[in-house]
Image 1 (cartoon, rainbow, N blue to C red):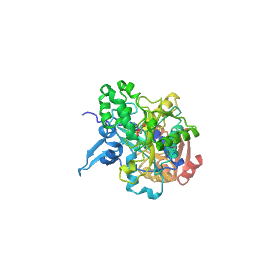
Image 2 (cartoon, protein in one colour):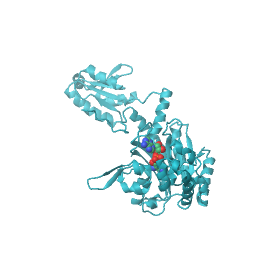
Image 3 (spheres, helix red, strand yellow):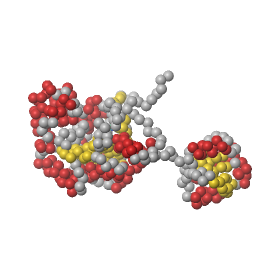
Image 4 (cartoon, rainbow, N blue to C red):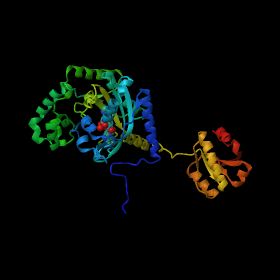
Length: 424
Ligand code: HAM
């Protein structure tokens, strides 16, 4: 029979690497805490319509990349390809505005996109995301960019670039799209078939094209930031002024438009030269129309999400370069060795007591010889081995072996915990 492996584009996260994930998630939670964002957890699947309406039915994510299925009740459901639409849905569904505005939320978890897998690109990947709902000020755009940078700096990632653009709002965008479309019309027969489709349906996506033969034409395309209404222009200037004020370097990138349709005004990405072709550590922007698109009252929003796998790629690469040791396997404070059925029962009771006192306790589950149980204790790198034989049990004692020193002491069972504690 053929071996059953994990589906293409997915990864098992095995120990001890899983400890790195926990460390990374801990850092993200600490940054969230320092900027006072609260955690939100939404379902892994949603009604397909949420993404069609929220992310946009002409985007690649919705057209080509969604894992959509009908459930037993005939509903069309989709494994979430991203987190923002679901956060906006939950915000609306639970009247979260009643908790006071703005709502500052973060999430961590898997996302699903049917993409061609390659380094840094998976079909199941993990994102951390930060969203602010109910605040339209440029200061908030700057705050979420600062949150992203705080995460990467805390991780010790130093080499990155903040790319920034503004794609305007519902008032100025139609005019810009008309100018953009018109500027590309003379070159239409030289553009790729995707671009020809985008030219008709969603011209902003033209600027996303990576096809080398389209680049000379797209490089000449008019810039959205040069065609903003007064309000959008002053918002964009204020974002730049505040980033300068906090000395956060950024690069204006006129072709940055992002792959989701909900964006308005500010869009940004943080890229790293240490990633391959998939060089975006994170991306985000403002989405002032999303909540209204989903049926709510107009509510501004801004946020970003970053890929955990991409941050880890850099961390793991750096560890290898500095020859930093990989995370160690989980290590017991105490390994209980028991000899005979009564000792096994005593070990079970002791393990409960020691764990309640906060120690990490492991034991062998069968009745092997002393030497083979000691071998397990060594393999698990236990700090102490507590040996309980029938004879010791009768005398109410156990042998405590400090593995690093090879020293063994007899300790009464009643003082075992205190003894282990004084050892620290
Ligand atoms: P996105 O740019 O599609 O934005 O994804 C955010 C980040 O997730 C990317 O920058 C990348 O690091 C990671 N990522 C995306 N797709 C993959 C993949 N197939 N494999 C590995 N990593 C991936 C969003 O999803 C928006 N919801 C971000 C946002 C939040 N905008 C406003 N708020």
